[in-house]
Image (cartoon, rainbow, N blue to C red; front, side, top):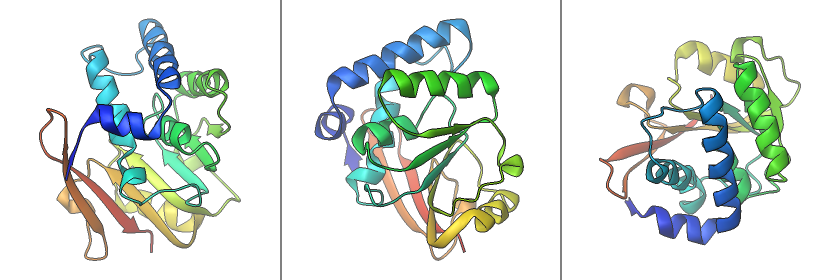
Length: 193
């Protein structure tokens, strides 16, 4: 599949909110390292658009929650997903207290409702049973999958951005895609159990 950032963003997001999101992360990145300083504004736009691919292909919609975004960092993919699907029930899990505080401020400034938890997955004890887990730049190791099993609702799935072939089992769905000028990438949806 081939995607263009501008078209994905125009279809799913309000450009004013995208501009505010970018301004907030750029401002915060000057104070502490949210993302690589080598990333350009154009690179950030691609990452926002890439976060929308599960919505575009029908893997996520407003009924997909509750969602647990593991390793939320500066809000990719969770914040673009919330901008596209504001009623989606999302919890952002980020072990860095500094990044978690930034995420709380960012959500407030964007008028988005979501929970932010400043713990690692091993320490997170949730009563919520999640329907969807999202991972970006987080390896889907057996230990992580076991922890998800405890928190997963029946029929729960994992959406992995940038997965390696070792993350995929025969029950998974795979979308190989390109976006703008970047080399081919992979999006994987797997059942938790």
